[in-house]
Length: 60
Image (cartoon, rainbow, N blue to C red; front, side, top):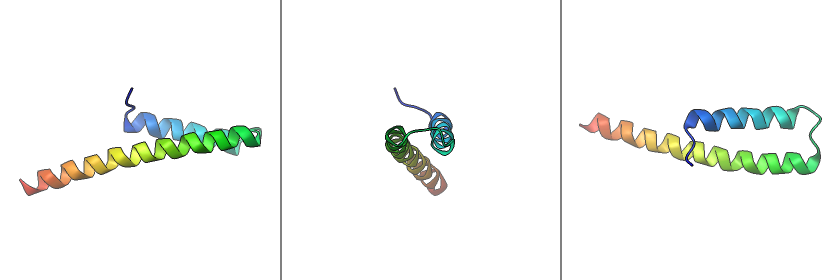
């Protein structure tokens, strides 16, 4: 299932809150960090695609 940019950002924010709450153990924090890194890459890909579309529309 492909997540929307907004869904990705929401999950990234939730991960940040969990990491910053000082109640998350080290192993869980590392797993959350890894998940966040994956989500950020996906969000960057969506943004790159949107930028390409905007660039192509500007050429028309």
